[in-house]
Image (cartoon, rainbow, N blue to C red; front, top):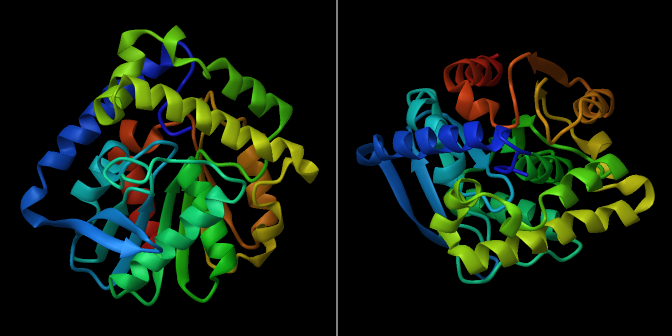
Length: 284
């Protein structure tokens, strides 16, 4: 769900992604990048900043640290935070392996992210998760309450409804997209791998609809104990407003911040506003 908005809305998202990737190139002198063996896979990661508060960035579907978080890697305060972004297994530069979507793929991504931070020497850290990355963050926070300091999620959902299935199905076949819509991911994966992986993701996320209540991680929400900020763009075409309201109700002590003009890519389109909001929450 990270990059794909319906109709013409995608073009604005694509422009924001280009800005994000451009932004990512401007901080190269202060970034450490490499691969770390985690749970049998070489995970690509980038690290910047020297602050005492470690933060892990979790990208969306088919996303990567540079496509999804350029403005955050560039501009989050490097004196207060140490920011780590990574490409989940099978995404971006964490290939091989090819990406697959077994019934526990969010659990797998959550374990990989937590274990990566441990391998990099961080004992406790905060999570910033966008879209699928927000789901991964909630799983990680529910499974590891003692390790997670704070959490910010946006564009995310704890269950799959029929309405969600309709949205996913509408964008299943990438051959029906314009070339401008396909370009960002084809640049990362190539046309054939992108189409195959995207369709596999649609099937992967749809399988949760067959669970009781369509649960992805409903049962884990009561286990989340860290302070949590849920951000929602009120013009998000991919995540209906009932999802952030559900998270607010079921994650104890959570807060909800609404961005009236925000869409699915609000952290890219309104990067300065988003970054300040996040920094203030993490420092509070």
